Length: 268
Length: 259
Image 1 (cartoon, chains in turn orange, cyan):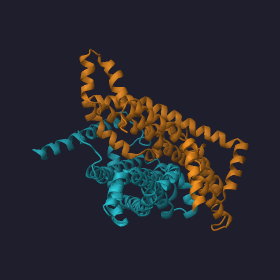
Image 2 (cartoon, chains in turn brown, blue; image 1 turned 90 degrees about the horizontal axis):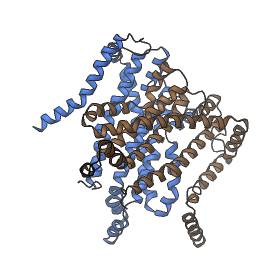
Image 3 (tube, one colour; image 1 turned 90 degrees about the vertical axis):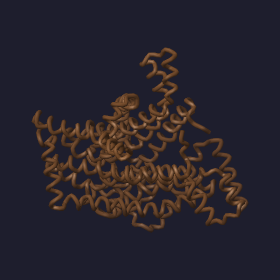
């Protein structure tokens, strides 16, 4: 027990100094378990290949240049879709949050169209735009925009009315109030919405690539499915998970925390 | 008086949809939109009546709902006890948090290709995808919920002589409940999308399949009907089942401070 505790203590000290370690080490037992299961051939190798084979497939696909290209395709699609989603979503959210009649007219529609869900749009989008970037971008924009709009509305509406009154009585014009009170006040919610939206958008992208794709990580996985190559499917899953994990926990979560703290909305 | 205001608020909620329907009924014939691109309102209503009469609509809806129910129930049965067990020890929960984050990111749609390989096309693969989407997110949220219960509460219960079982049912489970319910809501949201995507690929009955087959024949009225059904169903599940549940648990356990 004692040496075990000692190693644990060392691990805790180490991971508190370099937090990155704490997000990598827990995967080692999982990898080991995976390797052991495949080495013992509990499941047929065709159904569950080992980590070594996945790494080999990774090297192979990188060498052929397929993987970097597909990865770039997926990331570009997500970025384009997210940019449009932000550009449309934030103004719409502010409008609905500020104006009572806009809220009355648009809120129910928003809830309903959000409920339809991105993927249900795929069949009709394929009829409209064919298989291509437009369809994918539409799906991602559609997915990203709702969490952003809903959260922006929430943020705008949660600003204390006294803030408006104070700014107005100090002589601020309406645009000035919008710029200096409404937007900063709603910012933490907007960032939360963006984070949720990207999470949904990422999944929608994979679904779109699986169903209508001609390239991208989702397509790689489904193409491998057609060929019955489990190695490449697993590789695709590992890449997807890793990429999103990095984006989410090293970029989005810190940004969210930073805006929240900057505007003093986090009570510790 | 209260009833009347409830009625007006329902009408207010429905009014924008009425406007949308009128626009649809007026604009599509006016611009002579090709029915292969977008259907007329009448065609969708006819498609609904026809599909309702020959029973195919009910078969699709029933199949989809059954898959969601089975997948979710299995996931909850496993995820909540597991999440509780892991959350009790702070060391275990900090160690496992990254793992569960990783897998809840992957949950759902990304499993479709391999699920179809493992289980073949059909009920198994789709239920597995739903199970996956719900399981990891709920387990992660349960773990988080248990881990964030203030230490003094646990110490207080322990020093008042609570046994393990009492601790579990009176402190840990209630404390984690708001998180668990939030997790269920998010997980089901992902599962619903995963369901539609999986049905497009891997089956021959269900709402996603209904949409995807209609696309092959350019039957846009069936596609739009399917989209409306999907939207209404999810709205009903979310607003009538999940949102009240979430509100009730959060208010019950006093996590919301009302102004």
